[in-house]
Length: 144
Image (cartoon, rainbow, N blue to C red; front, side, top):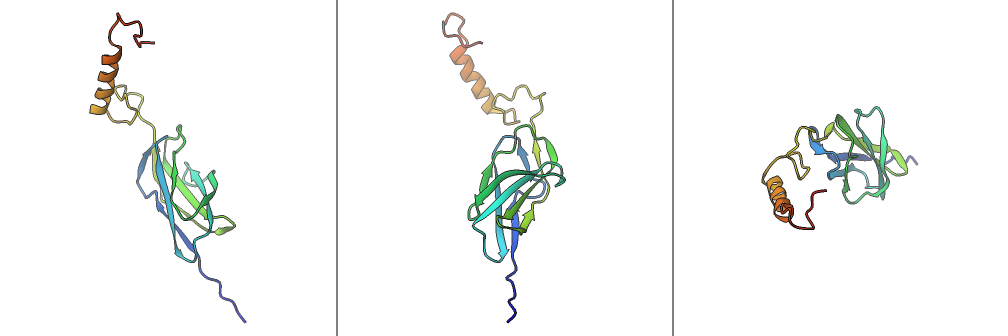
């Protein structure tokens, strides 16, 4: 009458090593079970100091779909990690590889759209604003 427990192995599949995310933009957190049955819910935690400390992102997330998250807007670290663990069984967990969450450089003043890239999209926004607000004889002139 010996019962052999079923092995359980949860693996974080994204984010991956060396991925980079703009702080405040969306990123997908995904996981899978390589052994055992997928739990009903998982807890997701975030570390910006290579796992020295953790903050809970979500304590109870349905385990059958990836989670979309916006990293905290003031994070700027090359030592970020995600930990996903089964709710009710903390022994079933995995920690992602190290990834980066970064801030745009404050020197990038021409980045009108806030995506850390100066391109034609920035020019289009600038041109649209100039065309709508560039007339000093308009009572609704938009300079504030």
